[in-house]
Length: 254
Length: 136
Image 1 (cartoon, chains in turn brown, green):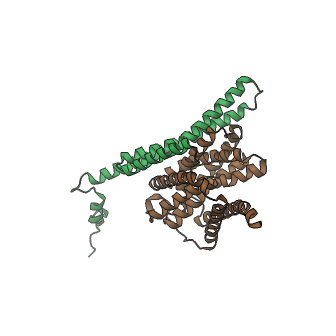
Image 2 (image 1 turned 90 degrees about the vertical axis):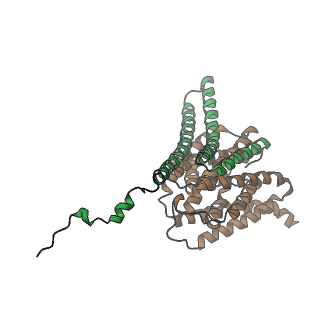
Image 3 (image 1 turned 30 degrees about the vertical axis):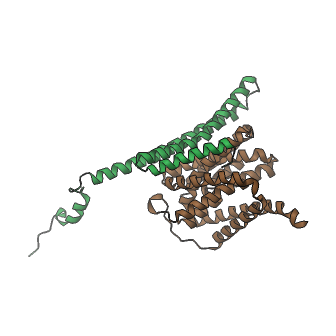
């Protein structure tokens, strides 16, 4: 439950769902098999999205129109990703994605951010829709290929590529991950991989964490959120490079 | 000779007064706009309500199932826990999909049919993805 609170709080603050935190904690900390940890963490992503997005939509932090547009591209990308999965070297994709997230995280850590950013959907207009749509398509494809949520890719994409304020990008990503997460959980549940005994305490913790995180997010300075996001991206990059390295290492060794 | 002191109402800027009044030439423009904005606000509040209700009800059912675990193990308790957890999980999974459908409908009611079509497309693709067993 405590790890659920942490994942919920972090997920609500950064718009990443929280799976990044939960899967390693469940697998490494509690020794739960990966095929049970992934659907349980996806269920928590859905819970996090519902609890946090309610507050963000009410406070006009989530951009419904942008979310819908990018959601369509993400789902299309996920379907294409699922179709080409058999023909693509997963390890190579993981390394490329790991290097990309490493680059984005370092850029976020090293670049200075403007002091003031608009903090509601009323005070900005998203630009560069073609980049956003194609990026979301790639995010959906990577999510199907590597099992990572789209949040770590979509938040920087909206924030840097489409000039959406960071908090709005994070809140919109939070709204989007709920729908895609629910579809993923449904697919796992149909195959009988969803352990509700494991899910129950986690979801309760996530709901509590998301409730606190969504109240904190509007008050936390954007620069702090960006640094926190960059730290989480570094973790993702590490996971992806490890995953890719594990797959590529034997062939390099030989 | 002392000048007469003007009344505060006489000092008011006539242009400001005119600006605060509703335009006479387009009587429907501002109230219509306000009605539109009110409807938009109400729509967003409804979406937030759907999300919050789903999260709270599902969370409540999961908490109740955890509380039931403290009771002595019995067949009926076991069934109740199972039912509560299945109900909670179903409610949690349906909530974001209901939000998506609601957002599409509300934007359609505001005349933004493009987003209704997008929401319908997302729902159809999700159904296809789940049916095919892909992880979106």
